[in-house]
Amino acid sequence: MTTDLATVPVIDLAAADASADELARLRAAGEQLGIIQVVNHGVPAAVIEDFSRAVGRILALPRAEKELLASPTAHPYRGWRQWPDDYGRLELERFSFGQYDDPASAAAAGVPAEYLDIFAHANVWPTQEPQLRAAARAYHDAYVGVARRVLGLYARALGVDPFPLTQPEYTTFVVNNYPTWTYPDPGTEDEKLLLLEHADDSVLTVLHQEGDYAGLQGQRPDGSWVPVPIVPGALQVFSGSLLTNWTNGRLRPGRHRVVAGGTVTRRSAAVFVHPSLGSVVEPLPAFVGGDEPEFDPYDVGRTALTAVEEYLQVFGRPEQVAAWQAGQPYVAAVEEPA
Ligand SMILES: O=C(O)CCC(=O)C(=O)O
Ligand SMILES: [Fe+2]
Image (cartoon, rainbow, N blue to C red; front, side, top):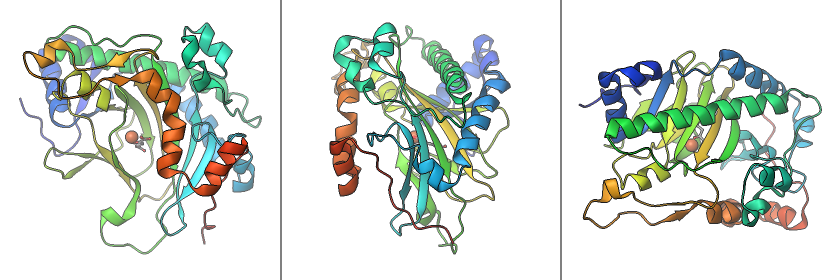
C-alpha cells in the first residue's frame, strides 16, 4: 500500500486498534514519511488546553520579564530562551522542561545513579503561573502514553514483537514559540525557515501545534516538502532516528522543518520519547536478518549526559559558553521587532 503523500496522513488510533486497513495506512506512512497526525488519541482536550493556556501566558509576558525565566545556570534545555536568525532578528523562543526537577526525584523514579547529573540543573517554574508545573506534568505523561500506543501499533503493523521501549522512558520536553513574519517576502520558503530541517533523535516525538497556517512541513522521500496542516484536536507524531535504528532503516525518520507565516504566533509543544537511561538502541534482529546492521549502537544515557556540551560545541555563542562555564544566566541578544 502507498499513501497519498499530498498531505500528512491522519491516523485514527481507535480505528487502528481494530482495523487492518488503518494499520496498513499507518505502516505506509511510517515507511514513506515518518510523520503522522493522530486523532481519537484519548488525550483529554482539557489536558492540552490547560497546559497551552498556562505556558501561553508566560510566553505573552513582556520580554524583560521572560528574561528572568532563563535558566539561572545557562542550561540550554531549561526555562526560557530566545535566539536570533542570521540577521539578528528573533527566530524562535523556547521554554524547556527537564524530565525531573532534581537528581533526587530522578532517583526516586528509578533513574540509575550514573545518570542523575542530567537533572542537576533546576527547572524554571514561573511564580506568575503556579498551575504550570502540574499542567506540564499531565501533558507530558499523556504524550508519553500516546508514544507508547503508537509504537505498539507500528510493531503490530510490521508484524514484529513490541519494540523494547524500556521504562521509565527518558524524555525531553520543549515549547516552541515562533514569531509571525513581519519582513518583506523573500520569495522562497527556504529563506523563511524558523526551524531548519532535521529529524529528532527520539524514538517518537509527540507534539501539538497551534496557529493559523501550515508552518510545519515534512519531507517526502524525493526531498520535496509536504505541509502538516492544523487539524483541530490532532497530535503530530514524528518517527525519530532511534526508531529508524531499531528497524534498520525500515521506518524512516520523519524529517521536518518550520516555515514562517500566519497572522498569530505559531506554537508547538513537543515531548521527545527515548528508551530509559541505561539502554542502548541498535538494529533489532527482526529487521537485520542475515545482513550487517546499518546503524551503530546508540547509548541513550551517554548521549544525554553529554548533550549540553555537544550542543554548545556546535551552536554555542562565546558569551553563552562563558555563562554556562560560570554557572550564570544567559540571554541571547535579538533585535527588538520594529
Ligand atoms: O514546531 C514544530 O512543529 C516542530 C518543532 C520541532 O521540530 C522540534 O522542536 O524538534
Ligand atoms: Fe523536531
